[in-house]
Image 1 (cartoon, one colour):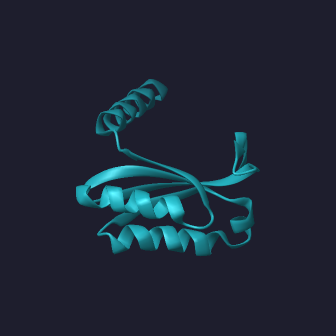
Image 2: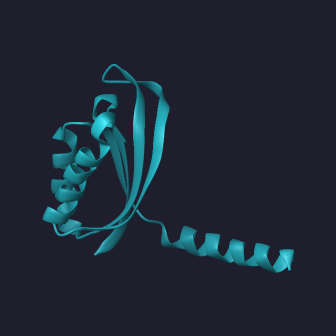
Amino acid sequence: MKEYELTVLLAPEAEKDVEATLTKVKGVLTDNGGEVKSETNWGRKKLAYDIKKQDFATYVFMIVALPAEALVKVSGILNITDGVLRYLLVKKDIKADKRLAASKERAAKVVE
């Protein structure tokens, strides 16, 4: 399984019960053989442009592991999931993670 970054924009009406909508999203991932590695709620933010007549959304960022054959099915289900305005599912950049770790290591050496 490969790791992916999933960013989900939740509709304002789903904001009252964010956990229920996130449980749906996590269920979609696990039902298709995936696993949620980490989850970060970025909170409610103003959108750059209206999406489905909404100008605010709750952003949730997840690191997930999914089999390659599940990507199309997960994308299709997230497109029709209530409470999800938009989502972005991209392959995690391993090289960027290594560069970030190296730069943090260099910064720690400079501080010492």
